[in-house]
Image (tube, rainbow, N blue to C red; front, side):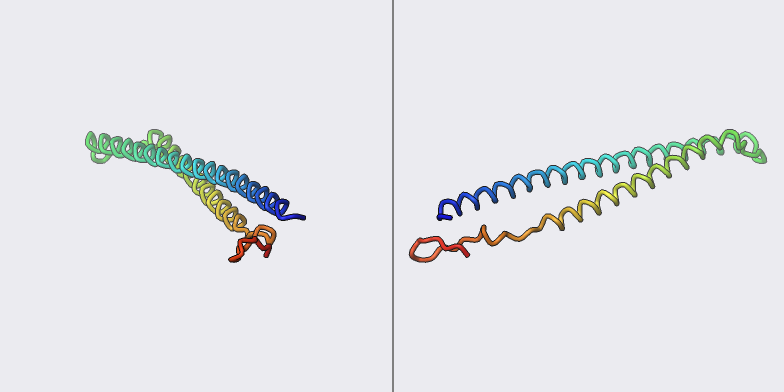
Length: 133
């Protein structure tokens, strides 16, 4: 194999690595987009939980203000409590998904660190003739 063949092989190999790097970057970008989407969902769910808490507070205050000894009707509280519980479960599910995506992204990063193959290493000496290492 002549020098030019070695250079061609090295360039082709480098091109393959660039393509692989672009694909990997695309996967990482998709993962980050998905993680951010889940985080935004969680923020929306937390806001809805806060609204439910406020509704419970208004209900309790209104009933107690009208009659200090009145019991809070469970039928009015239960739908809000169920909504809060459902939203909390959904947030936990999203957090697990975020953790999974973060861990799988880290594993892919570790796999992506590959040393140059021996055929890609060329040293130049003072006589300007490349030497395959």
